[in-house]
Image 1 (cartoon, rainbow, N blue to C red):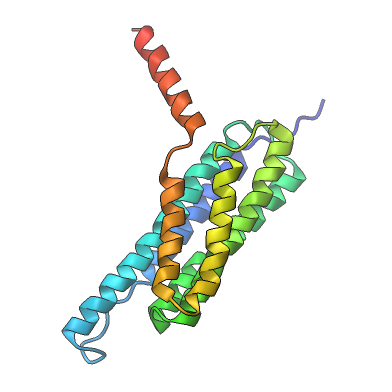
Image 2 (tube, rainbow, N blue to C red; image 1 turned 90 degrees about the vertical axis):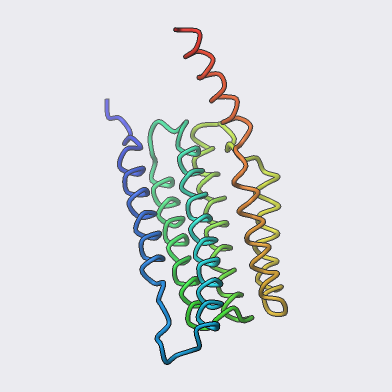
Length: 202
């Protein structure tokens, strides 16, 4: 009997792509030249760019962590899961592009709007991937529908807010990251149960 492919290659490929995405972002950080701006302006520019880079890094890391949770109950992959995962990784790979746009153009309305769009795309792709996997596992994602809905509203809203208040838009994206940093209840319960079993076995 022919068995369906395991998740090993999908996990390894996804981890590799996400690692490259993070590496590309840090390589794009550039120290301003001596004749480009004053020391004070350069310091302010560096602080803004480090903050944007940190936000991009944290968002990418959050997707990596939750990608691990999402695949936890998946025993095999299907054609639809493979393509949904590729679409998600493609959208996630746009984040360094948005980060670099701000690095070149500064924290201004259109660059920040483009940066916000780079978070809307993976959020949509994530929902598609979650749906494709949940159809197989029949297990709801560790992070429920509420947090996905709130995140989607904030991400989409940040695109329009950026056109008037770019710093507020970045704050909205940061708040989405904060929401996803909180560990899902199901994962917390599993961790506590595993820790309890480990202590009882001693």
